[in-house]
Length: 319
Ligand SMILES: NC(=O)c1ccc[n+]([C@@H]2O[C@H](COP(=O)([O-])OP(=O)(O)OC[C@H]3O[C@@H](n4cnc5c(N)ncnc54)[C@H](O)[C@@H]3O)[C@@H](O)[C@H]2O)c1
Image (cartoon, rainbow, N blue to C red; front, side, top):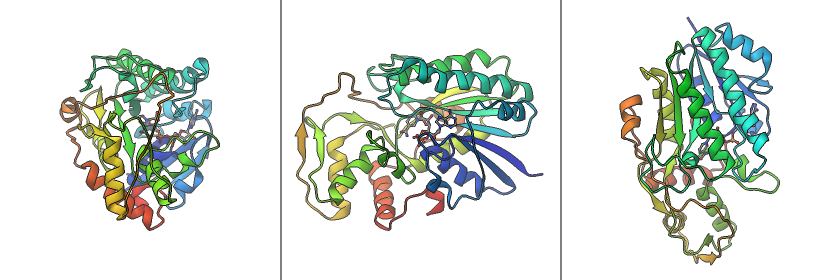
């Protein structure tokens, strides 16, 4: 019997990486649904899946979910630009749509793996642990926390597990489109600094580059998503490397990998809200998923930069 798996937001960064990995599994068909508001068709050129342009809460799609058309759902679709301040728009796109999707999946008993975010922790002291310090500082982070709360309310009534993955700062192949949008560049700092340095400019950081983030390589993120297919129960867990590193570290690793010297330009931070230290506590993730991060920042960046240097731009499994 072939399985059919739905990936919402599958033209985006993480969604296309999940779709590409699923296509490599035996007897698996993938339907990617995307409204192409921030995703890019080029991510799917080498992914042999079915593609449909529509909203993730499209009524016909919800009917298919309720009828049991899919063996599992990956829900990655969202407004992902964290600088969007329109509160109603953010909640409608991220939270309301998820609530409708769960209503439909509850009817067929379909497993749902969905993207939450480290944004739910705001600037709470690290290490960040699910269930504590959930103090989002922008509407994006709040929309994700609201998703987790909706999921909690379904746990006892939903016939199949609901798995929320709180991604930290994901980096790796497949995110190039996020730097090609008009206006805001939303790709990882790793890609932004690589592009600055490749174009011969000095890397620019907010003073003095010592802010710490948990950067997690896309290979670990894909593996966490695949592991979630077998999670025995519902839950929310962190998907991070478990280690906080500085932006200065990123510049040094990039310079070393490219074999160039880098002179960092430090500038004032104009943002009123800025996460200064994120670091995932991944002990619960191991308990729920049987997964743990395996890629260090150095190893992930080396593989990523090597692929960028070869001109690769799509998801990892298509390299
Ligand atoms: N990249 C990260 O570091 C990171 C960190 C934390 C959480 N996340 C979450 O992971 C998920 C994937 O993010 P990403 O980095 O791949 O971003 P992305 O912008 O590349 O992907 C999001 C995709 O969803 C699509 N989309 C948006 N609204 C839609 C709608 N209403 N219906 C259908 N499709 C819609 C977009 O067109 C895009 O293809 C998101 O839910 C995001 O909030 C990402």
